[in-house]
Image (tube, rainbow, N blue to C red):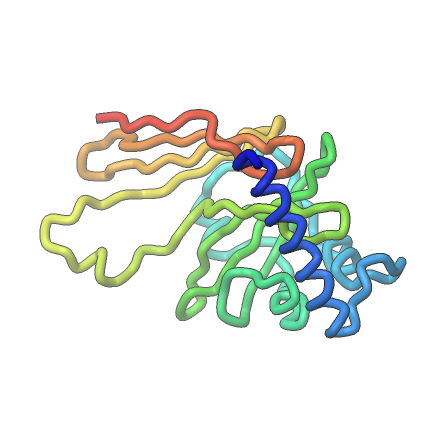
Length: 190
């Protein structure tokens, strides 16, 4: 059995386990009143393209709180105050940005791809908050994280050095037919 076939079987098992876990909580994905669909449909829409801005990562404009039963059922990142917004759908892509609460109203941003039952398929960290320990290191380089999602669903992640005034790393991801994020390009720029 190839690695790809093995991964497909593992994904199928995980999907069955997730559906069973949801069924135990009274959530039937086949029902017309699927609460996951209702939640996703209730989210505000953020049109593409989007790009990093301080306002987006600090104030989370138009993001809606995620009900705890949904956050738990989907095993979302965060502690208990997650917020989310959906992105424009195209080519079968169903995406949402999750603001995962880390500490004191500070959030990391995760891009989730969802399947036809509104279950997470894959996730990608767009923006992570700085950890205090990282900031206290003597001689640590001050790095800013930037991201862009184009209208054709190319996700660009960049680390910019404030000290050197240049981009240090850039990664480009796309969404494949199974709604997994695929790394297309990764380069360190020194």
